[in-house]
Image 1 (tube, rainbow, N blue to C red):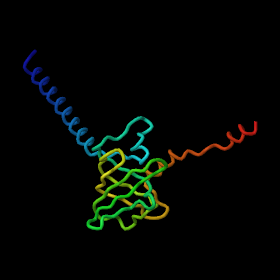
Image 2: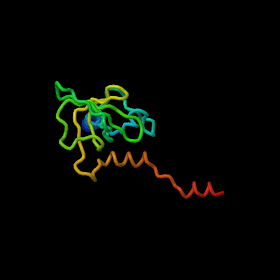
Image 3: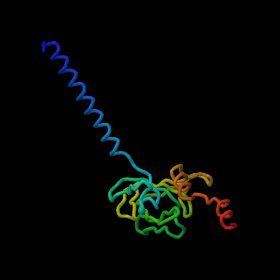
Image 4: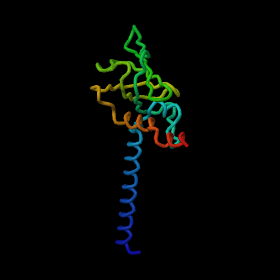
Length: 160
C-alpha cells in the first residue's frame, strides 16, 4: 500500500471512530436525562409491555390527588399525598411549596425518584391550571385505562 493511501485510510478510520464515540456520548447523555411517564397503576403493576420502574429511577407520575390524603408536616414544608388513577394509589412525598392551584381531587404531574414500589420522592409538582385542563400524558393514560364497554354486544348476547 502506498503512503498516500495509507494516510487516507488512517484518517478515514479516525473519522469513523470519532463519529462513533460522539454518537455514543450523545445517547448516554440523553438516556441519563430521560424521565419516563407512569400512572400510579403502571408504577405498581407495570406497563402493558411488561416494563416496570425500578427503585431509584427518575420518573414522572400523573394522576388525581386522592381526597383526604394530603398530610402536611407542621414543622417544615414537607407534604405527602396519594395519587391514583383507576387502580392502586401511590404516595408522593414533596418538600417544598406546592403550586397555588394544588388541591385534593385534581390532576397533577410530579417529577421525582421512585423510593419504593408505592412511594415517589418528588422534586417538582405541577398542577392543572383550569377546570378543563388535564396533562396530555394523564389524559392518554386515563383513556387507555377506561376503555368504554360496547353495550350493543352485551345487549345482543343477553337477548339471545
